[in-house]
Image (tube, rainbow, N blue to C red; front, side):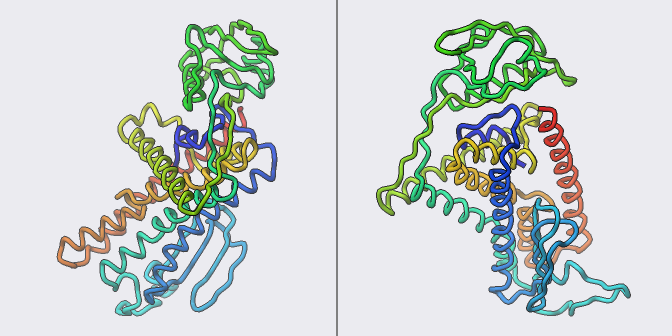
Length: 385
């Protein structure tokens, strides 16, 4: 779960509909997403195995298994739906057909029988792995292609007008630069795309006056956006920032560390700011939340416009996954950590199994429902745009 506004912080991407053209860029983005999931699960796995804790399954993806192998009592699998993964422990699958336990409940190598610090390390290792991955991606970027420096100019670019939409009917053309909406001049800023999209959505279908730059001259075009069922307006264009991207490479390893740290801090603040807005003003930002479909589409667009931006895309998705997972909510790593804190406060006395299962099950159902809702909405938006 990520907000489009947060993804926009990567720079130079559109926010009003994504094009999935270019199979190579899409495959590359999906590969990055799967790598992020794999790193997260490897964090849990390595932390467990390094402490001698038994692991029964390591899976990337969900649904039917495509490839399965077993080694050292661990079943490894690659599954059909690349939207996540999991590490399972023997106590997660306690019974066979005869309802008899398939493990010794007193086995000291079971996760549930380890101390609070040992379990906390296993649970938090996925988050730590994503943080390390994010920083490494930024370090590789500044050491190879260089950090992206974006020079914004007034206006937003409209490279592709969708046929049969309000944009085509009112006379907008491919590669126009939208300079002004009514009395508002589009600024040279990182928010230019989101601000333009917001103004068009809030028009509710009211006719607006666009000033566009075309072939060296400015043209005034009246345009009435299509009014959607939710009351928002849409004209049917791809919107890109009007910017030039340059890259500055690190001159030394210490320089790379400094630049990477600054960029890691900037992206972390973007994620935290987006998360804060979700919790404090959900009704206004709910429409910007993105599921895996929209995130892959966003990464695809970044790959097509500036492949070097995939380093930052990788970093920001890793940071987002780490921050969201550490929240003390059911079914997330932070939820498990919250239960460990309660156990520690009880002097190490285990919480009732029924309470733990109920707590986690409630969160799993909620996250599944939200995830499926985002997938359906994002898929519909991609098709309709």
